[in-house]
Amino acid sequence: MTPVVVRSYRPSDHSACRRLWAELSRQHNEMYGEHRDDGGAGFEEYLTRLDLSGLWVADHADDAVIGMVGLIMRGRAGQVDPVVVTITHRHKGVGRKLLQHVAAEAKRRNMTALTISPESRNIDAIRSLHAAGYDVVSSIELTMDLERHTHPWHHGLELHELPFRS
Image (tube, rainbow, N blue to C red; front, side, top):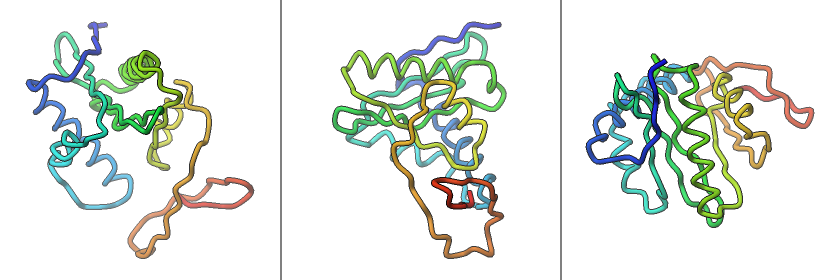
């Protein structure tokens, strides 16, 4: 297996990270049946966040930047956003390595907790995050879909004995 190193984001990583952002956006759009493609433009706005505390990339010896993870400040806690690995390198431990790095960085900064908000339909991500130690439900965001006829909702999530769609 070719080595992957997690390191700080550099300006020269910009186009690779923008492509990763676009890939994440496309996956989200496919998951929810939406047809918006920003081509990674959201990454430009992300980089201007005043609460962005760090951004790291997974640098593959042969394929260059294949993943990234960001850390947003929330008082003494942090929010992991985003975490993305390019599709050809998923299920190979790259995401785990990025999550371990951001957790070590948060501990080094004396943060009290890390949160992450995966999409409710992204079962692979939820399972990976749970295995990485994200096992406390700290908040819930509920949505009222005002266009119910346009979204192929998935059923099967139960929370406090109440049924929800995802």
